Length: 431
Image (cartoon, rainbow, N blue to C red; front, side, top):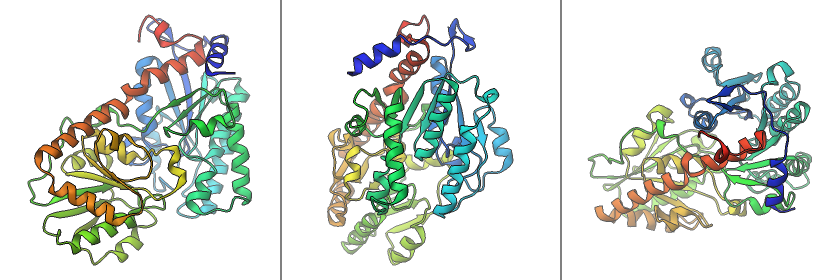
């Protein structure tokens, strides 16, 4: 069955009318399951908090189901959960740290609490969305939707189990990998709608669900979160290249810092500074391995409320990806939307097509090539004001056109309301 047939069949669903009324139109109530979601003040996974605010403008009310504690938010105080109780439904969780076994135990706990969520708590849900920073949590969302007799929407953030194989060197016959492979296919086939942050993954999804309706919903920055300012680099004589994000396996920091070493040897120490903000499992190793560099300064993670102001004071953002076929599905790092939100040009190493290169909103070179990256940075350092300003304008345009809620918001709202009520936003009297 083609996409048109899928949409027509869904339009014939019996509408749900148990929702409260706002402005004469039934509200659509969504339970959005993301085990590691957080509010913006935590600098972790705040995307769903932004979606929650923006979808409300279309008459869609989102309740976020998340772990009280996880490896991303191990020190979350109880009063935090109380403060955000109107936006979140908190399920039990514990601080898992960096231990994979404890993380698995935590997500199993979350899965069980979600699967057996009381009908009294869940009765207001018209749609259940399951997000896949962990597929087991998304499967719990599917089981909850099935138990309630409600539509199920799948949000794909990573390609599982391929991520474990290609990035973390798990063996294809590992029992957990095999389990996730079965889970992945079941989720694709069971979803009434698929949302994804990965722009090129639709072909992979349709291998298992040929009629799937798929919407690209990129990571983005809510306009209210961005200071009313443009990129205003400091008056320093040095060009500042900023990295703001995690230092983990997926982030090719070694290529970045190796390029910095090359540039220091080329004599750029008096013209260039790399400001690294963040933490993660690779932080100690990187600090010790590149401690000799005067051109690099390591800093702690920036609080989210100060992030965009700090980015706007820099000259360019940087991000490096490993040479890995996993990324043929596209990339969805928050850093990209963060940089573009303030019109910051991006210097990136990446082997596949990306609008940063096409726009251009920066300079893109091959992955795992420190010399090519150093050359690209040298080109930027020597670039005149006219060239830099062009890249800044292009970066700001790309942020608005592709990495903002208006870029996809109406299509998403239409799909969700159609799934629930059988009529789209365009058919309503008020948007």
